[in-house]
Image 1 (tube, rainbow, N blue to C red):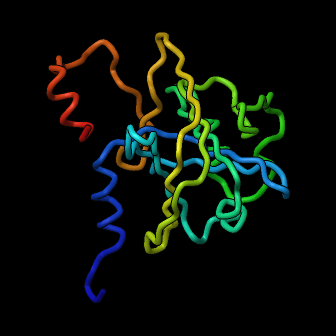
Image 2 (tube, one colour):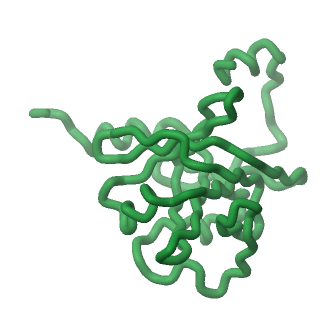
Length: 177
């Protein structure tokens, strides 16, 4: 598109704060993992989530062929873990105590929540693939930690001491349920 400023578009998109997750899987070629800020809920019935990966991502063919996925939501003290899995290539798994989810996906330590998923649908997302996944199991950790947030190209944390009350009707509407 002539005259369209892709960098300015990317910066504008950065005005929308997102959480940070690491997608994991175990394939015939070994463990794979990638940091994303493109995680989102899709449906409660059936329970669906989505994430997207750049078509230029290292190992995209392995992601497309994966039989299961794990989505690990990072707490606010895990920016180093996010950075490690955001880089292409290298051994992202070295020096990590990795457990397994019930579906076989690697489970990273110090998670805020995680979701075990199977592929449901894939869509063309321009320069990204959109992976819609059916959630088979999930866990959350209750506690003092908050989510790692990405906003305007930087990590951030929520100020858990300040919140705005939200009525149940608004909570329901904001999620589109």
